[in-house]
Length: 220
Image 1 (spheres, one colour):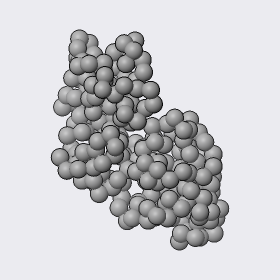
Image 2 (image 1 turned 135 degrees about the horizontal axis):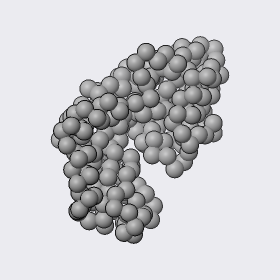
Image 3 (image 1 turned 180 degrees about the vertical axis):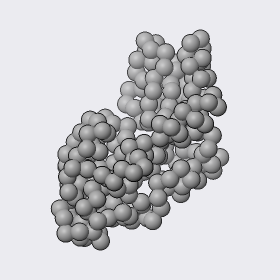
């Protein structure tokens, strides 16, 4: 986004608000929200857990709970797998799943693909991923429910499931020329109704709730 603000790039993609980026003058940028991405914790199947309360999930990631048998799972040590501190996925999970509590030290990875691989191969591991990484028929990881609520499109669009973010396209001022044409294409019905769902994303128009830069959620 800094390069967009400086006029070096036409479009800057982000899964966090510009206001959350240090050193960025968000007022100089125009935000087009082109998609919604849901996220949840990914758990190794041997942990024996498919649902956690939000409070217990926070205890797991802050290191207060270190064995799955403390939260109804198997007698198995918990291994935390985090994204890097600069990751938008981590920022979203930390804000809306952990309520900005500081996670304990664990394995840190730059790639969601690597997080998935480590969680799948490490008994007792837990990380977090966008919903596009949970595919039908893939039993290598468990998609965790939170407070008994599954991470589904219906639950995200209604605000019932809290861990989601917008995919933003930022421009310096109102988009024009090729930048406008590309953003218009991203907002077209073909992309919003077909291409985004095929890649595991949700159309912004399907949301019945909205969020502002502070994370506050309201009805549309």
